[in-house]
Image (tube, rainbow, N blue to C red):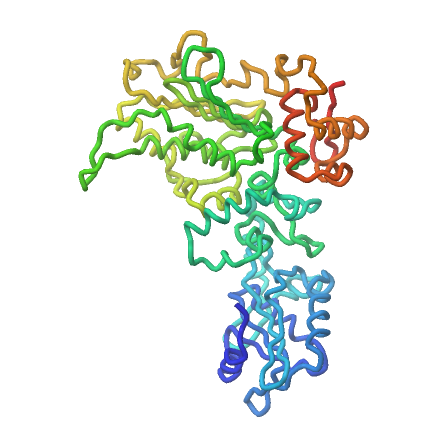
Length: 518
């Protein structure tokens, strides 16, 4: 909400206090403005009022001669890296208000995220960093600057900024779904009124880059982009939920990122899978304190926690992707990357060290996942409480991989089965074997690469195929621009062609390309 004229007059009457700074600005932007910008950003934020002059210890409104030109000049300077280290403002933070017939320019400076601190003037952070103390700005001591740098450097892999993308490259449907869930969880939260761009910055799915524009980071990509766009950056990205509840060799249900029927990102994957993994879990008869039947127990909650953890802790640069496999008596959760803490410490609980802290934050804001580090400790306790065999946790290397297999059936003598080799129906792979070892990925499955009836494919698939055949380095964004098709159509076409084994992505985001089967 913008400040009103009455609120501005009230601030002026209070004078310069810890969160308010008044500047004359009759001759243009004062040099001291940038010290206050740095000080507020490095402390707790504040308001700078341009067009307010101090006379005899009192402040009066003098106004600025041309508010529009002054605001434009301010934006030019704040986006100039020679002038200030980073722009942390959005359009709503800078505006003019008519007070007593004169224009006052308001600059609301928020507290900078730790990744952006210290915010400093010029090229030397040690001489150009300021903080707020009482009614004035002061130079930060060298130790304070070093402390801010230490905090800023504690980043995880999913913080990597993708400056070749913008927020417009993300899936608007997923963003809308996430924001609706956020609003239902936090109906009065101030972030509900923000634009998508600023909202994504607040939840740590995007950041402003050195060019002054907002770009998604890796967390924003895997949470909110579409499959085709994700594949441009992460060629080994792979999500697969497989369900087989009988001895039949066919899957009874399956959700995969390349399905071409949905976005293919990890947030939508969680929403599509979280009920599926608990739908056949047996619930012992329990009555709550009000005499009502308990429909869900700790087993259901732990399974959803395992699903969230597989997505939160995965190494998205790793191979073989995330595979969830549900069978009649077991569910396995497998993801690339090994434990970041000692396995015994992870099982004991109380130590949380997320591989992807931004994804962790994005999920936690809508009550997905937990922050205590007690997930595995609780898992063992709950399975013991319900008389289920102990979960099986394994780590593999080259490629790095963690797999957790849990029993969901408390009957038929499962408690006597050895932990290291759980049994399943005859003909099924052991649950402690990774399905990606015993079965090829869908884009490598010989059954998928048999001759395709070209005429049966949608025209969009044929267009994408021809475009990639001509230019194997064409990106998702490049396909949208070249073919004139919308993002959803391109995403569906890529997913279909990957599923059919017609194309596959190779290499990293700098040198990656598409391999096209002729």
